[in-house]
Length: 167
Image 1 (cartoon, rainbow, N blue to C red):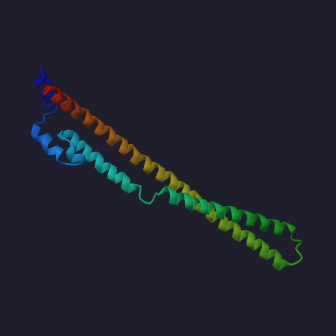
Image 2: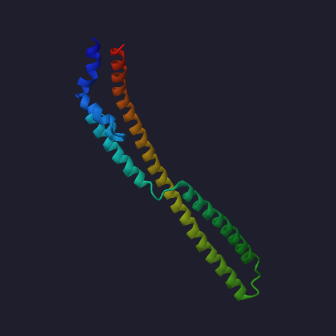
Image 3: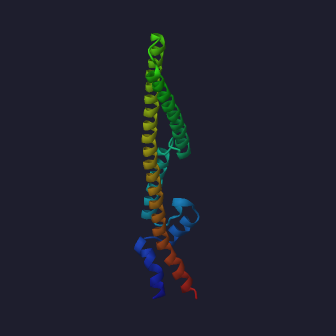
């Protein structure tokens, strides 16, 4: 009966002792003695590597600092624009060159503010894309962890059963 319990996991995965010996001397994916599970783990590892590569250029701190700086610039430009508009509103029109200069300054600040706002919107899109990519990497890592847990479930009973056979 004990021999049957010991052999059942081997038979269900169609493995022999040599497969376990070879796997025991390896690391990572190659340490999985079951061919099908080893192949799946290899595929998952490849998917994880591609997901990690896709995250390049989407560093959270870097994006955060860039956006924070752009928001500070946007705030300063908005304040400058409000001051310039107030100066135009307070202008009595006594000097046409002064009035023209103030209006030109308002127009220039509006254009610059528009550009900075567009940059911030692009950063938001990049941050959203980065979050999706990092989430995909995390999902793949969790999938790999689940796969290794399944592998471990298939190996642990063999170790327990073999120890019980020697008692």
